[in-house]
Amino acid sequence: MLLEALLKATERGVRVRLLLDDNGVPGLDDFMAALNAQQGFEIRLFNPSTVRSPKLLGYTFDFFRMNRRMHNKSLIVDGAVAIIGGRNIGDEYFQLGAEDFYVDIDVLAAGFVVPETALLFDQYWNSQSVFAVETIIQGAGNIEAFKARARAVLSSAIATEFLQKVSDSATEYSKGRLQLEWTDVQLVADNPVKGLGIATQEQLMITRLAQILGDVKASLDLVSAYFVPGQEGTSLLADIAEAGIEVRVLTNAMNTTDVLMVHAGYTKYRRELLEAGISLYELKLRSAALEASQQGLPLGLFGASLHAKTFAMDNERVFIGSFNFDPRSAALNCEMGLLIESPTMARQVSARFDGPIRTASYQPMLTPRSKLIWREPHENGDMTIYQEEPGATWFQQVSIVILGLLPIEWLL
Image (tube, rainbow, N blue to C red; front, side, top):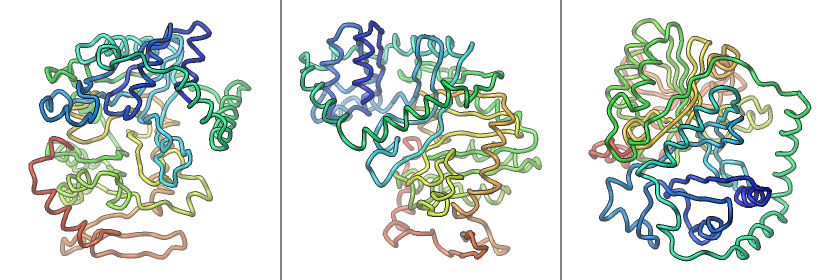
């Protein structure tokens, strides 16, 4: 549906530039070639595989280049408005059809930050890690086959329902029922040379984020779908907590994460984080109570898996973007996001920790004898205590231990 909308835009004379990470376009080579051949429609790929089928074969002889991905997400229109966040373009990220889905956080921006975001797009578009589709994919594709597929999709009941929801949401803005908040915003992003593996420390987003977190004074509420803080990140968060600042972290539980290796990386630091006084929350499987109340929607609390990446500081500032707090986002993937001066938005994030997160998550903690347990509060006031990782089979528990011993943290 999105590609068809972009094609229609080119027919109105709009210039469309689509910059895609090559890992996220499985099976789309023919459609990309066909669209790229249309006037006004240009597609480029970030660190693409020169082997198109099977694409993974490219990793066997070009691993270190292809292991650096573009994780940025932005949609910029007319240089006037932009949507930035952590959401991928896929049915499961828009709750289409599948039972399992991810819910993320995006932000709509206008004003001075949009030209800055457009400039960043241009820098990536022209970077050495990016290649025109026609230099990677052979053939011109079949535009009629694409249009036929688009018609079939658009005529489905799922598409009809989804497009009605989109129309309703747009109406909220057009009729003035939803208003933008005018405030100070900073774009925080990796330099595109990170895709080449030659970025200096000053060109990395993690450096700026560490400076931002170093300014926290009273509270830090952090949400990260994949949370592998590493020793440096653990020390940073521990120092913040030990200075008397409240630190709360929400990530996926073992039975909601879609990458078991990442959870294994997180568990290596769980005890040290708890010992430093950091409160941890691990999102459990979809909560019927939250689905009914919709209270958790902004943080994806009733999705099958948490995918949001955000943090709120001192009930004053909030960061929304693509950055997971893990080694891959820090050192390998290119990332971006917005730091927003907004007590209103910051309090919305923090309020989730005070309310719905408590009954939508497991809460690991240490007993007086330093034994790790998990508490599960229920809506009716009851409490379940787990002595082992909730929802984990024996095989998964063994796998987590083994994966934690392997030297793979830099890949997570």
